[in-house]
Image 1 (cartoon, one colour):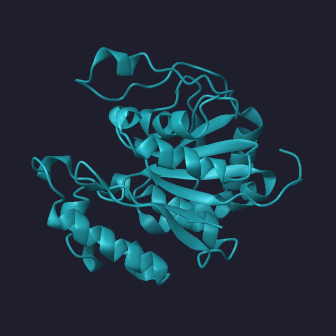
Image 2: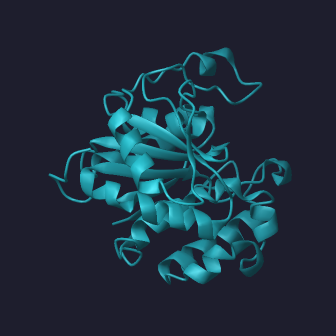
Length: 261
C-alpha cells in the first residue's frame, strides 16, 4: 500500500451479534451511526472471533462467497450477501509487517468473510464498496495477540480500519430466558472500568482478575479480538484515547464496543 495520505484511522473492537442482529430495532442504527462518524477507510482489516487458525492466515483477496458459520436459523439469513472488493495490496502489507521469526503467515484464498466480519459490515458499510481482508487469530493468548496488533498498527496511517470483532460477554449455554444475567452485567461493568483506567495488566489476565470471568467467557475467543485492537492502539500511544461507543445488552450479552483513537 502507498504511503499515508490521510489522517490515522482509529482501531475498533465491536460486539458483532448473530445474524438476527439485522432485525434488532436499535443495534443496526448504532453501528451505522458509528461508521458515519469515522473517516472513510481505504480498506478494512477484520479479526473475527470465528476464525481461529494457526499459523496466522490471510483470507480471500478477491470476492468469494461468505462463510455462513451458523446453524438452525431461518433460510433468509443464508441468502445475505456482502460482495466487498478484495484487498490484495493490504494482504501484502500484512505479510510484510508480520513476517518475522515465530510468526509464519499462510494464505487461504478461498476463505470468505464469516458472520463475525460481514454481519457488522452490512450495517456499517452497506454499499460493500470498501476492500476487506479478514485474518485469522493464530492464538487466544492475549499477550501474543497484542503483539500482532502492534505489528499491524502502521496500517492505520495508510487509511486501514483495524476491527476486532467479538462479543464483550459470550456464554450462550448459561443464558436464561429473559433478563440480564448477573455474570454478564458484572463482567461488563468490570471491563468498562478496566478500559477507562487503562489497566492493561488486568485485561490481559481477565479470566482471573475479573468477576465472573469464567462465566462471561468460558472460552475466550470472543474477547480475544480486543487485544489485537489494543495492540494496534498501544503502538500509536493511543490506549488513553479510548471510548465505549456502544453499550447495553442483547439477549443478556454485553454488546460493549470500543474505539481507540
